[in-house]
Length: 415
Ligand SMILES: *[C@@H]1O[C@H](CO)[C@@H](O)[C@H](O)[C@H]1NC(C)=O
Ligand SMILES: *[C@@H]1O[C@H](CO)[C@@H](O)[C@H](O)[C@H]1NC(C)=O
Image (cartoon, rainbow, N blue to C red; front, side, top):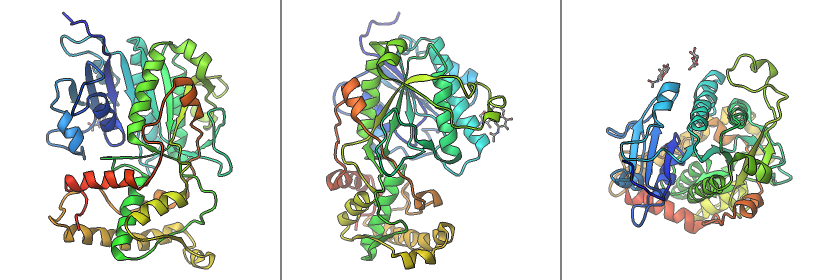
C-alpha cells in the first residue's frame, strides 16, 4: 500500500543535457531535506556507463533513495505512457517537468518535428490523461527579440529559424490539450554550475582562452543595444518548482484566467495537415506563460565584459573595416575556432593535473557566432507566482563559483 506522503512526486522528462540535473538537485539536494517524495528522471542517455556529462553534484544525488533514473526512447508513445507507472509503493505522479526537445540548431525540420513536437505532445497527452496537477514546459529562448524593447508575455517575438519554429509549435500543441495543467516558462540564456550547455558557457570558456593567450576577445558584432538576458540554472529550477505549486493550487482554467496568453501561429499553414496534432493556424490557443530572466538586463557587452575581466583580459569589437574582412560569418568560423580550440587544448594539457576528459569546448558553432537577441521582461512571474530570484545578478562571483566547481571535478584546467 502506498504510504501517505504530503510531498509531491515528480517526473522529469528530458533536459539532462540542459537543466534537468540542476532541477533534480534542487528537488533532492545532496545535503538537507528533499522537497519531494520521489523523482523519476527519464532521458535517452545511459547512466552506467555514462553516455553524456552528468557533473559531480548530479552523480552524487543519483544514489539517493528519492531519485530514480530511467533511460528511455521518448519518441515511442507507449514508452512515454509506461514512464507514468510509479514504482511500487509510490503514489501516482503529481508534477511533470517537460524539458524535452532537440537543442541543436543545425538539426533538420523532420528531426525537430519528431524529437521536439511529437515527444512533448505525447508526454502532454499522457499527463492530461493521468490528471497530473502541474505540467511545466521549458521553452528555450529561440526567438528574435527586438533590440529596442524587453518583451513581456503579451508580446509575440518571432521564433528564430527551424528550431524556433518547432519549439514554438510545441507550445501550441501543448496549449491545445485542454485538460493539461500546463505552465510554460520561457527562459533566458541559462548558465550555472555543471551546465555545459549554452551560449554563456561557451562565452566563458572562450574568454578564458583569450585570458590565457593574453589577448583581447574580439566580437564580430557591434555592441549596440544587444540584449542577451541571462538566468541562473538555480532559478530555472526554483521557478519551475514555484510554477508547479502555483498551478497545482489553481488548475488550468483558473490559471488561464490569471496568466493565460495567446500562443500565436508562426508556421507554414501547409504543415497543419502534415504534422499530427498540430492545431489549425486560426485556432485561438491560450496557456499560462511566464518569462524567466534575472534582473541584470544582461547585454552582449556586459556578458563579454564580465567574462573577460574574470580572466584578466578585455572584450573588444572589430572595427567596421575589420568586420568587412569577414564578409560572411561562415568564412570566419573556421579561422576563429582554430585559435580558440588550439588555446583550450593547450590549457587542458598544461593543467595540473592535465585534463583528459571535459565536456567543455571552446569551439563556437556558427549559431554561437551569429547575432541573437534575448530581451524578456520578468515582472509577471514575480507578481503572479510570487517567485523571488535566488541569483538576480549575473556577475563574476557567480562565474567564479561555476569555474571553481569545474576545477574541483577536473573538467576545467587548473593553471
Ligand atoms: C527510438 O524509437 C524510434 C521509433 O521506433 C526509432 O526510429 C529510433 O531509432 C529509436 N532510437 C533509439 C536511440 O533507439
Ligand atoms: C520521423 O518520424 C517519421 C514517422 O514516424 C518517420 O517516418 C521518419 O523517418 C522520422 N524521421 C526522422 C528524421 O527521424
